[in-house]
Length: 484
View 1 (tube, rainbow, N blue to C red):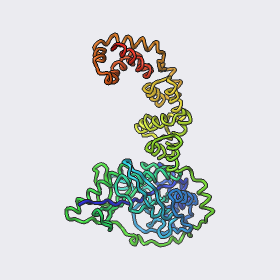
View 2 (view 1 turned 120 degrees about the vertical axis):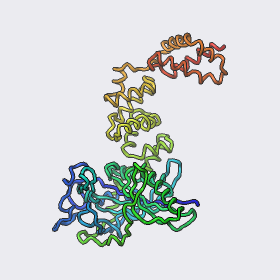
View 3 (view 1 turned 45 degrees about the vertical axis):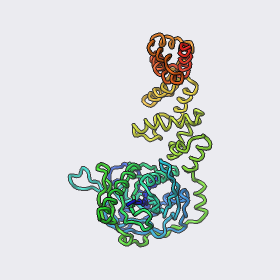
View 4 (view 1 turned 180 degrees about the horizontal axis):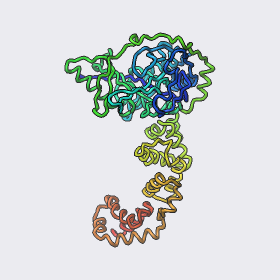
């Protein structure tokens, strides 16, 4: 039987407010456990929540960015459940009247599949604390620093049909929230977490299958792997005569398997009711329009501009515009060197390699965009070759300094004197009788591929400093002359 996969995502985005959604406690990451949870976060008797207007503003920004309806009246409700890291016994959230209504985003996978994913809604809520299970001698610890951190939970419709589409959608949401500046997007620190609702059905069937929820996945790669693993499990289960049960499952990336966590609750199990301590939030068109006027250039618009203004391919423009800090860096490098394609190649190539190897965000790159642009200028004016530029880049990364300083102190300037190059070429040819005879015996159309040996010898003799274009021209001229 041929199966169709149906996927919807619930993405939890921690908002970049300095204080929590209903208290003045700090939201800074990395503090000692339980040093940033105040009486309000713990719902101690006599405390009352005060809504953080900055969280409201950020939620409206997101809604506008995803073409959504903005709720002019939104209501906070209590979602009751009992976990050790939820000291109040309920979570203050939104259900019936969320701040952001229906919207959509357009996605494209790496293999070119395009799809519009509808958003059911996005609502504001507070985060829970965190249970810790390591280094407690068999016991668990509770860190409540995260309790009360403002979240926007973004709920999609079940519009995705593959793990690649789900990952592309998550990347698009990540690009939007980081571009808006409402979230730092650091998935390793839990700033953005994803729950994947996955089901299968016979191809052509309209009725949805029983879904499972894969909880708290914190990387795009794991989203793909977790969904693929769960889909395979469900197919095997059904084809062996079993049934999928609605439940919450965890993904274990080390074993590449999903395992049952708990039965999946329905909304009525949470006993929602309006929060008696918080009034409805009412906003008007002037409030929404004022926020709309502050929105930055969004990823789709920037991608289109990169294609139009810089002549980039759709792929290059998509990669470079997917993260605001990277897009900003790229534009500054283009401004510094005046070559959009060369800058794209280096930002996506050598720079990306070093950032990945050192697990460094581009915002913290030891080589600034202006410094990279200065290096690219030296490639363009033939001061250095592309290969030497990689060595200069490595020294800039490890030691700091400008490309010009390193080229000067390391003596890396390219040899462009044709007379000097010609002399070295003559010596290489004179010491390569066998290769010269092979060149002369080859068909004319095949001789170009045989230049590599001679090129390598010249580069070796010059320490890699000879201008490759000049070397190629002189070699071909002299070797062809021997064939006549």
